[in-house]
Length: 138
Image (cartoon, rainbow, N blue to C red):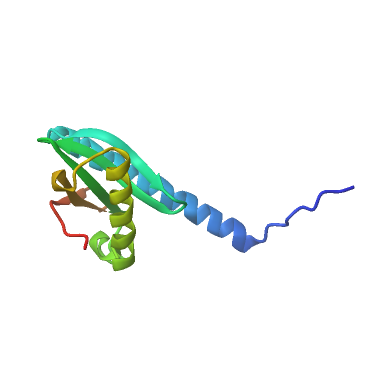
């Protein structure tokens, strides 16, 4: 008769709010990165390309006939470390598989690709954006 309803506890609500705010700040970082890339002459091909449930490439761009896969890391402060420090070996392995899948789906030669990382650290009244070009993901 009655459908079962799940009662949310304060912990569920807290983590939902945390995850939504993280997604929002990540989106802000990606928008800053895209604006930077466009000013540098990159043509944005795709954003937030997903492969599987949890694997994602933040930005896919093209410049000088090279397809560039870009991981964007944004931090509102360095209290928990620099954005660069959040890229783990596990994350790199997932990115590599996602890039391979994208290349196969779009008939892109592996010789014509590049992996970049853009990190953004926010201060009170400033942003520091660093672009690490042609990084290894193996």
